[in-house]
Image (tube, rainbow, N blue to C red; front, top):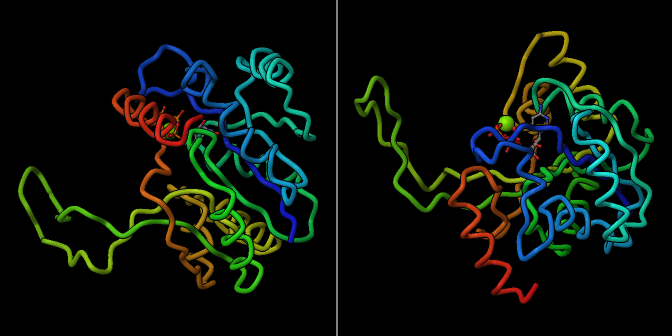
Length: 227
Ligand code: CTP
Ligand code: MG
């Protein structure tokens, strides 16, 4: 089963504090953006990449894509103020049939076998996301005081990719727009229109590069994988 993928890459990387888009930072000498693009470049089932970018990064991203010989067709769209706007801009350019994946460009360690499991599950059920069981004790906090210890066994930490039937994701985004709802992931938009979302157990090393210490973890993961 083939799929298209939207890669939101139009953020500012404020929490990373590098003074530029964190996707331009290098891991083992190669920009994060390229690590992520390579996963999809090397997956024969991926037939189209839609990259949401900030206009200020456009020239540099295009040069890097040429330099690192990424040959797969990439459709560039401009992002918006929030991740959700960037993805909606991209979704509007997607071919209307089949499965769409949304994957944060800031998660370079996703593996092909997990992608294929997700695509298969989304093809069966309409919507599937990847995550891992929470490891730490989880508590709800308000004004510096514990409100509640949340039962951990039912809590999962959610990652990307998230995979959907394209028609379903369109409907979810349209409803969110009509309601002025902004979610922190794509699944939350689909949940709002009452479509069940399946979960696939992923890997703890599919980290998102968010704050500076994530770069140390990332280098260690690369070393472990010999990349
Ligand atoms: N993203 C996007 N458009 C936005 C905001 C984020 O396409 N308006 C992308 C980022 O480039 C990233 C992914 O969404 O690949 C996940 O977002 P996040 O980790 O929050 O990245 P940034 O928004 O860049 O970081 P920060 O929130 O620290 O500024
Ligand atoms: Mg952000």
